[in-house]
Image (cartoon, rainbow, N blue to C red):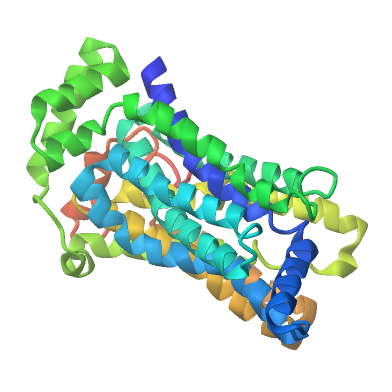
Length: 408
C-alpha cells in the first residue's frame, strides 16, 4: 500500500461523496423548496400553484436525478475507452460542478426550472461516475486489496448521505435563506478532486491492454506499487491477460458472446436483487420501537454486501475489453431498479399493505440463492484467472472447489 495508491483511491471516491450528499440533502428542506416553487409560480401568474402541480414538480425535481443517471450510464464505454479511466472521471466531474452551480443560482434567478435542470445534469454525473469509479479503483488496486478499496466507493457514498442529511437540517443550512447555498457545498469535494486526481497515474491495464503503451503502463505501475519485483510480476500478469483478449468489444458482441452470458446473468441478478429487495422503499410505520432495530439490521446487512458489491462485481467478472460495457450495464441496472422500485412501491403498498415486504423478501431470497450457486469466488484472484472460468467453459463457471462461493 503506497501513498500514490491511497491518494488515487481517495481522490476518486470524492465523486461518490458528492452523489451521496445530493441524495441526502433534499429531504429535510422539502417544504421550504416547495414553497419556493409556489412563490415563483405566484410571481409569474398571480395565483398559487395547484397542489397536484406542486406535488408533480417536486417529485420531478427529486426523481429526475435518477433518470439523468440512467441516461448517463450510456456514455461509460465511450468515455472510458476513449479518454482513459482517470481522465474520464475528471471530465464528468465538470457535470457535477455545472449541476451544483445551476441548483445554487436557481433561487437568485427565481426559476425552479433551473433547479430541475441542475438536478438532471447532476444525474448524468451520477450515472457516469458510479461506473467509472469502481472501474478505475479495481484496475489500479493490487489483487489482495481490490475488494477493500472498491468498497470505499460505497462508504464514501453513504458518508455523503449522512453529511447531506445533517447539512439539510433547519438548524444548519436547510432554511429559507440558505437552502441554495446548501446545494453548492458539493463544489468543495469536486474542486478537491480536480486538485488531486490529475497527479495520480492512469490505469496501467488501460495503458497496456487498450493502448499498447508498455513503458507508460510500467511507469504508472511503479508509482502505484513501489516494489520492483511486484511490478514485474503484475506486468507479466497483465500481458498474459492481454494475450487472451480481443482488441475491443461492441455492445452487440457483449450481448452475443457465449463466455459473457453467465457473467451478464450474475450481474443482472445481483443488481436487480439489490434494488428490488425493498431497501429503498418506505418503511412500514406500525413497527414503532422495533422498527429501529429492523432498519439498523437492514442497512447494516445491505452495506456489508449487496450495497457496495453490486456496483463493482461487474468489473471483476469480465475481461478488459468488456469491462466498461459491464460497468455501464451495472449502472443502468442500479439506477433503473431504483426508478422501478419508486414506480411500483406505492401501488403495491396500497394493494398488499405491509405484506409487500414478503415480495421483497422473495426477490432477495432468489438473488441470494442464485448468487450462492453461480457466483465464483473472486477474492485474491487475478482478473485473467476469473475470466478464464467463463472463457474456458464457454459460459459455465467452474466453482471454487475448496470453499463456498462467497463475497468474503
